[in-house]
Amino acid sequence: MRSKVLLATSALVAASLMGCGGDENGESPTPPAKNNEIPASITSDLTLTADQDWLLKGIVHVRAGATLTIEPGTTIKGDKSTLGTLVIDPGARIHAEGTKDEPIVFTSRAEPGDRTAGDWGGVILLGKAPINVPGGKANVEGIEATAETEYGGTDPADNSGVLKYVRIEFGGILLSTDNEINGLTFAGVGSGTTVDYVQVRYTLDDCFEFFGGTVNAKHLVCTYNQDDGIDWDLGYTGNLQFVVVQQDPAAVDDTNGFEGDNDAMGTTNAPLSEPTIYNATLIGKNVDVDKQQYAMLLRRATRANLYNIVATGFEAGVDVRDAPTSVNLEASIFHGNLAQNIAYVETPDGTGSEKDDDMGFDEVKWFLDAGNAETDPMLVAPYDRQAPDFRPKATLTTGAATPPSDGFFDTKASYVGAFSQDDTWLDGAWISFTPN
Figure 1: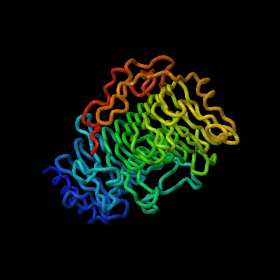
Figure 2: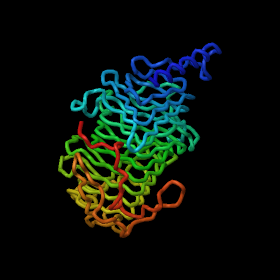
Figure 3: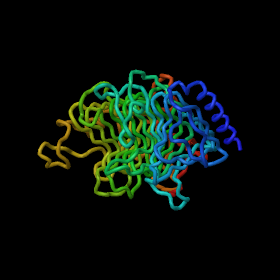
Figure 4: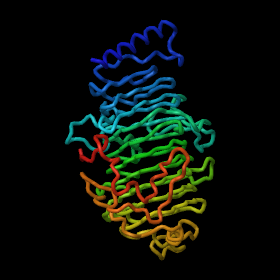
């Protein structure tokens, strides 16, 4: 089969390189795969072909200087017992460019019907873009800390490759107490990286987490996650557009649509976290589970610029915490949130709904003064598990903001939410809402 030819060719090249003293990194080149198991350390270019499935066992690293190419229509299955996880080291690249009807799928090794969140790890991209920790470098929890896996740096345009028409499902395995792998982690990833049409679903942790960096992304879909939809900290400053979060009503943890921090201690270390997000539809659990569940929890000195957001079905719309936190939230609609449509009333002594945690900041007044609304967005079927329709019955153009013409944002999306009434970008085999 063609995959064997490709791998055999890689092996011949490897033998030639070994005869010349090894590759440029001083490591032995990547050995050929055995029984479709992806090698644990990929040190030279490798292609995974679509004519067979591939097994991800243990923590697999693509090392600096190597590119992992994955053909459209390829399936990669993660092994549970060995915590199967794919890590793209700083200086390495992944080229995973599927198509609308031939997506690249990272999934559980279990049989359909037996698959569940936490069956394997996830996908982690490590880059050389700026983060705000002292010294400018850090390691991701859950994988062995080495010099090769330190992320962060001084190149905001760093390129970790391409993720397009990719689905990541049933991941987020528990490594230790309160330490799960996110579905898709970006750590110090730069704006040279392309991310478009990616779904993460049924993950035990966050769908998408951004640890610093400048990576931009469009068409992100998070469904039935057990933690936050989009989480950022450590100085993330990228752009996002067309984002969907649909939460799992059975999730027992505190969960939010967006959760943003500058860092865990709430310092004002630079660069400050400050993403810009246009056109998002955030769908909460729509049930009272006696847990914290906000459409947006923004705290610990983060900044954010948020426009054209629809949020419904959460405990409350937004909670802004801590005095240094600064957020622009405009042209958005909060409707149908269960306890407080916009935000809780906070008082210094806690006699209101909640104790003040933001030095007297009035979220409700701030929300309404910025031209936001509480009108019903009339979404078609946002809570349906297997056949959701997140589109509005009529395109929400009233009061909408026009995205900037900066080469990234789609300026035609002058409407509130991730969809117009006739959008079809969720069509195709790349998206799935089948439970297991």
